[in-house]
Amino acid sequence: MSAFDMRGQKVNYQYNSGGNINFGNVQNPTDIISELEKLKDEISKAGDAQVIDAEIVTDVQYQIQKAVDQAKKPEPNKNSILEHLATAKDFLKNAIEVGGIIAGIAKSIEMVQQLF
Image (cartoon, rainbow, N blue to C red; front, top):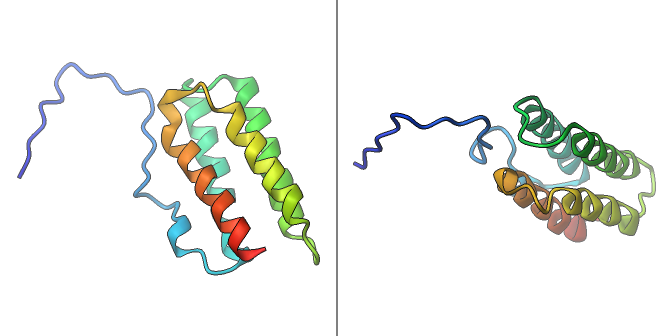
């Protein structure tokens, strides 16, 4: 068993990829919507911890919400969903601290390509 000496370390925010967001269990478009909603909450947490600038949080959440809104339509436009998710990911490209969120968005893009 490994032991880590964590004394003196200060962590403002840590994305928990093993937490409640799991794109690996996505089976259908409804599951994608649910996971994207969770991702929006995680982005809020990163913003609250001041890891991401408030304007970026707003921009990313807006793009994810647009993707969710499109995915909820009776005949969703796959390209529109992908564009919104790619834009959300681009807003975070310089935020190293949220690499897990970026990976989550990347995984959601992969799942949209498969299920829509």
